[in-house]
Length: 273
Ligand code: MG
Image (cartoon, rainbow, N blue to C red; front, side, top):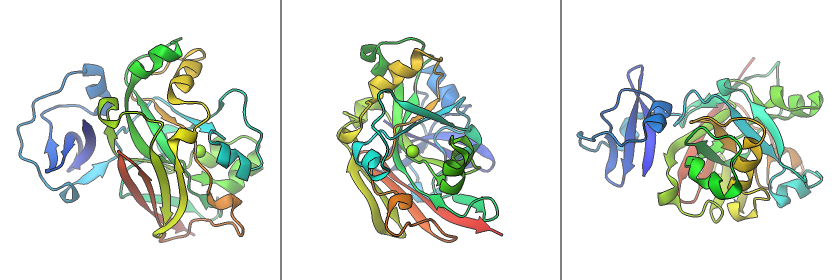
């Protein structure tokens, strides 16, 4: 199943993505309400073309976004980072969430080094504390694409990363959630990032060091995961900051994250001041 949130005037609604288009669901609530209900509501409407609706982020109010640094060996190498022995966790505040086709916005007087990071995102499906790796996969509601947008000057200037990772709009996710039964193995997917159509990242989620089940089990020994929580599983090599010369995003740029079996998440950039 592929399931999206979309805007109907100011209201968020849920829809199933099918080959023939988006079918609106007869459900009064958002994605987290839907995850908690665990029952598929009726779909009565006829499919409409996906490009005739404005998609919202597939989860709009997660209790937390947990991100992982240096979780692909190729990216750890390019950043001259030492391979972590346990997952290197940081947080992005939920205000950073934005949806497909929306803008990534920043103030030039706050940051001048805005970078992209293509990532596989996991959406948690149930309250989870202290689970084993074997139990972890049953805690997954689904997967989506994410861009872990990063203000490198703030990230590296601060010593820890929360400020540089948490600016409003710095966590685009989407275009929809794909459930595990439809996606299959989350560790055999091509993952790419394009900037203005140029391929900047091209790797495979099979190269992830701490796999999805290991991450969920590890987190759950420290804190409770809630339905709708989002895990960003790390980015592969090719980010802008470690290129020669470095590449940062500019006003008017278009950035896309594409993951095999999920889809393509595209956002435009707008800098102010
Ligand atoms: Mg990242």
